[in-house]
Image: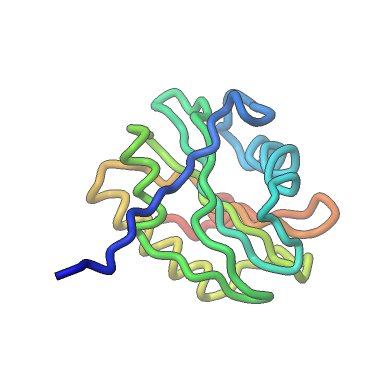
Length: 152
């Protein structure tokens, strides 16, 4: 009996393939990394939400980033499996979750807050810290969910 299973591949873009900020320990540095690397990616579309994880080692030095999901104008499907798979493969100690709002308004939605809290709990089980969730808006605007008080 023939299986319909097709092997899949995912890619973590390593630091040597992009502009590295090196140390990322605050939201401003994460935003700088995003603006220098993500909009130049061939898959990037400013009219769709893109959910990306930055993978960090135990000293908050960036190992690379991974595109988790491309969404629509106002939503992006995210599951713990897809968020943590590259972190486990690269033995990352922590992650910074990032996505952009095509509207240009970086205000966190209820869905953004819920998925962040769900991923924090999943990370606790795996011993992989969610360091922040940064929402990118237009013209250098962004929101850090950690700074905004949404982390426990």
